[in-house]
Length: 424
Image (cartoon, rainbow, N blue to C red; front, side, top):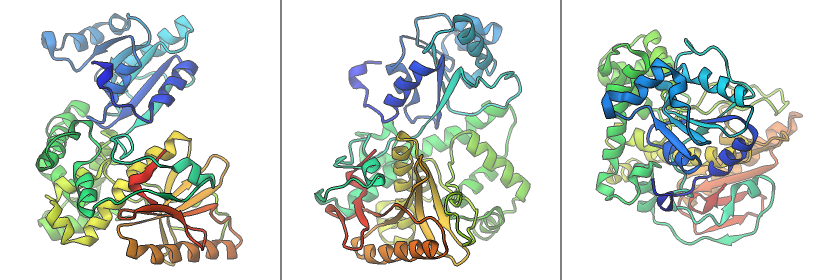
């Protein structure tokens, strides 16, 4: 790879820091999200286990004797290490033997079964999660506003410029795949569909060695797409499949497939927030369901720009998914965690960011400027309810929106932030 072609990622600084602290760094995440490019940019030698050359010679060598593929200048990249799970223990042993930092970078697009891995690697191997590109990384956000500064209460009103509604929809359908940058918008969905085909028809079998029912897998994926950015239960997914596809999937099958999707980094749910409120308000604990990138849900629904314009409800969920992806990436960069809030009064906050010191930030995600007042009112009402019940109120409240030409602080103390102006 020519490093001059490498588009920097937010995770770069984290990788550099962890190479100074640990003997090895494992970068895991969805296929095609750019793990290999990032790892190559930080490595001095490499071996690719997915390389088909010589009838997958590299993989065969690793299976015969893992030490054979560990030799090379450090940091040495071992790409798709999960193809030979025994490599994990071999790397851990080599790290212990040499006693040096920054010896290896592993990349993995699936979590293997623990069989064959004898040691966790704690203290030797650091694991980092990488995701498809945020808008800032793909250069579709101006980066005029730092999300970390917002979370810490540092802010100045800023004119950010206009972004068209159609551009926002294009960004949702395109997704954050590096391979989608620069291609014709008419081809955006092709990338996401091929991604899904590769997962369903090849990668799940390679992960397990078990032939799964691809038709049922696709039915569940479509149901997840119809329920993107919601807290839908397994029972509701089952009923949704029956109603829309006239097919029966039992809960055990759904649970098995959902676990597979998680292991393939195809989905990444948003957990419920309650740990630090210290209020007696009853909080629901259901996860909010998300694909790792909104383009996948759009591809499963055959969503075009025209379709989404004519279905603003679905568009709203897809926009929330894109914002959640970006906010998660930005929050990770300063060791914060992303959740959602939903209580038994059916009051909801789309995203909650919890900082290392326990402070938390409430965020509503809205498509249009005409929804900002309503979103701000929701945030204030929930904040006051928690505070009135003796709980810990949010440090900061924000509305993240699509169509807005400025980032500003309202008179009621709520920040309004265009997603196309944010960075980490």
